[in-house]
Length: 419
Image (tube, rainbow, N blue to C red; front, side, top):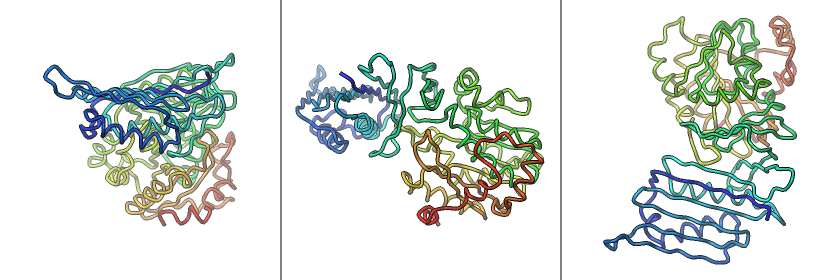
């Protein structure tokens, strides 16, 4: 009876009307995605309904799977669909196949809004759930989580915080792993310090995203920082982090130098850029964003990866300033890595990609520093060590003067992506 049960309620679907009305078209789509996911169909039923006037009124379908079942109900009058995928994991783990199937179905129906749920069935006395995130349609990574301490649907996304044996408390947004207590320093230290230490005297900074407070905590370690603007669209993320992720932000979310702007990052930057006076620009801009394509098919931060947004960020930088962003995994997301690197290169004179393995993400992760003049490679280990001492940045768990240069030593396959 051990298994994974996934549901999705999809609203305002912009798919072809036939997927909601025509059982033949729906069957073709559903069978293709199910077989592509690696699940085994052993039976099927597609039943169309009719309205009182004889017109088509929706479809109920069920696939019997060797692994369990898939059920779909369409409401064309509401442009809505409900999806239900259940797989047994008793003899083998079919969780990644189920997640891949649900993601593919949701993408096909193209909802403007959706709500998803993930339930571990028959997990036994330990009450743990193996929570997987799809890195690609074919690969997933995850860890066992206890029942959620936080599980809520904000106006923007689904927020979950749960305990895990290896990572401590873990935050997920729309099913995607964001940060954990025990490995957050891999990501946050490497996102912040290579650029911040390379800058001789960073005073004003902007972080777009980063509601867990980890990147703010690292940036505020630099004593020259006078003002930090945290543009996080979702106040519920900050509230959850304040309550449950103190060991990640260490009080930085309430630091007097930090100003929280509860606004969409794209809108904030676009509005600020044309009117930015010299004394209102930033020395550093960090894009601490969710992925442009989330685990459940969402794209809350997609606009913040566009060429127009990067141009607007450049207009907000002081001379000598730099922008930092993550590019995704060069192995699992090579097209995204290459595209974002090329976009940065079309906006900034200098782009320096680098990589770090992030345990929670289960992958080598790419980042980049972009600037018109700041060059992190000009900071050698001796100068980096000197600045680390001057700024009293001794309490770091990953980054040091030797790691600084090593981060930019790229394997050949990474060097060639987007070059």
